[in-house]
Image 1 (cartoon, rainbow, N blue to C red):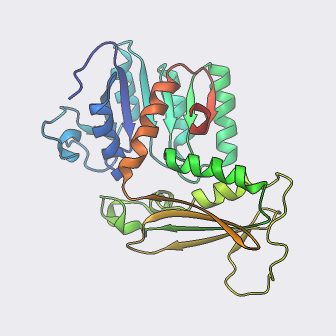
Image 2 (tube, helix red, strand yellow; image 1 turned 60 degrees about the horizontal axis):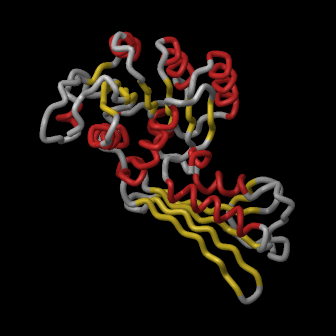
Length: 289
């Protein structure tokens, strides 16, 4: 277990009782040069986050439902600190603003974050000269798939994207009754397929023009370039993204599966290490690969 040190990056996990929050606590505790310094959540308040994460030893860090209190306490140490935000689109701006007020950087991994919110955060961080990373995905594999899809898009005129995700109840350790409707939706939205479709749009290519569009169940057209996206959300499904490029006589397939939230931890640790040196907002973890 990583021993506390004045030189360690102190990491506050906002959304610590969620499945990804618990995984982050374990990953940060094991990582060199950083330590968990605070755990924020409205669920399991007062419980030791180490015990909540089924760690061998308690971390002696209780879950607190008060971000400002934790930030104020940690700011006294004068050490480098990063707030990791796994919360909700409606609270992200205020959370980053509070972190900045206490001189702390932020890593934001929140689904369905609006463009307007990112723009407002970018302007705020620029004015405050404070670093922030907003990551649509923390999966390095997902980023590599997106980069490969962009490269392939210049060589094929037909493309379809198929994405599957498990239904909400099966992917978060907390019972559904402990989640608000807004939180429930934000945890399990489909983002990778739409992100890929947007990435290969407006590159000068038109897709699927030679295929009849009156066939039922052809998926949703994303953007104006004809990219089609198919999504499935069912209990027990893996988190999977497949991109099919084709032309007569050839199919080029890109596929990425996420079988465990642990796959996001290398990306999270990378973001924490990079954000401490930033003085502005960076959108997308791919900037550091």
